[in-house]
Image 1 (cartoon, rainbow, N blue to C red):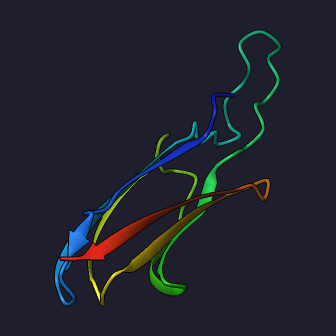
Image 2: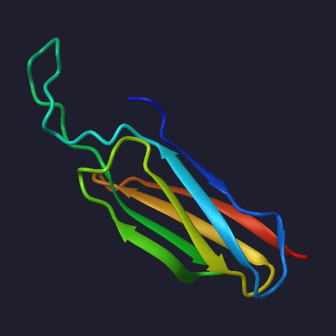
Image 3: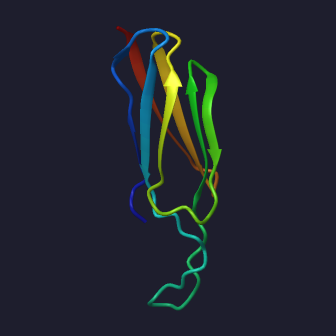
Length: 109
């Protein structure tokens, strides 16, 4: 399987109270468990990202449960009001319990 790679775009600076847009994308095949391996004919095991969470300084700001019907490389875009300078934390949880995480800081404008 290809390496799972999360990517996030957060503005570098924002004034407290500003509404910003955050964009996230994770490179992941999102295998549904319904396809067969072309060489062996056996089912390819299910492996999907089933949860995405975004936090600011440990406080939940956005979360979603993901269903198997979501395409490969899930992309989320959402807006949030910035309370001040700090750090966003992002996590994606896989069926097998793997957690992929990244962080982005934002400074006061």
